[in-house]
Length: 176
Image 1 (cartoon, helix red, strand yellow):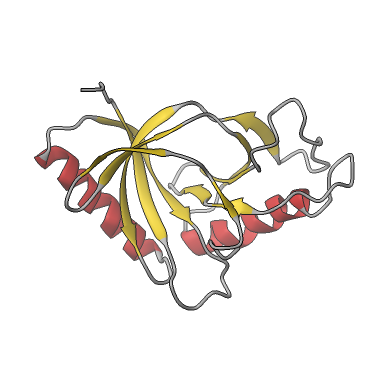
Image 2 (cartoon, one colour; image 1 turned 180 degrees about the vertical axis):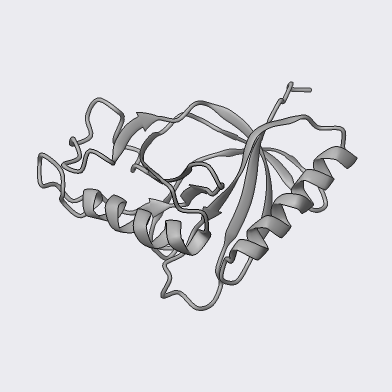
């Protein structure tokens, strides 16, 4: 899943600040699993196997679907989730039905998000640190957010250099 070989979810940069940016993400088809996992590592291992099975052919059409980036993750003590963005040629109505009932196909909502980036390998500690940093930046800039802080991972676990990670949260944005 190297970013230079993989279709990435499209977005529009709305505003760039020193340490974060605001983006608009249009609706896309996503495949999602929910999990009782409470850590990045636990959700990564278990969720990835289920979602990759779906895109590698465990669907009613036995069709392989290209991997995209980023992988979306919401990690909490209650319910966590992992989502793969489907390639742009798919929507909720033309994607093969998963054989695993834990894999749910839906369309994401259009949303504005605030984003902080970081490199290297993601850890729970780093994800929490970046979420707190983003929360502080939003407060300093009088921006309102809602929902959960989420992690976006862009790289294969085998990619050692040039890794890209992000923490995002939905924001209430009124175009200026």
